[in-house]
Length: 140
Image (tube, rainbow, N blue to C red; front, side, top):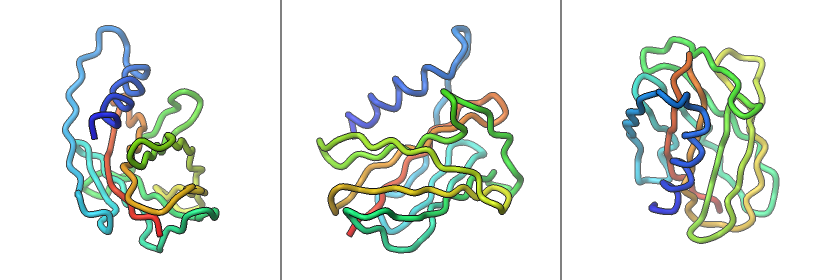
């Protein structure tokens, strides 16, 4: 988890003005079968179908507020959402979901090289506030 935190800290810092104060509060499950997490009033839910190694997976990522309202996502480094995954000391995978046809739902096409548990970080800017949401996923 230390390596992932360092990656996240360096990536989150690019989205902040020099005078910004940062307060990151993370809530996530250690269980890779529970694919949701929150940061303050923002939450994400990753679709529940099985994720397979060595093939493209088409997943959905729902981004909303805890009260169900819609976030106001802003571009960050040219994309609205950054989905970063790492398994142990393996390579860092970085994907960019695209907007779906349903409000708050994003489409994620991702290929994972090996099976196992991945630490995931989802980064976005909601109405000027940078968000970093952690979760774990199991790749079969």
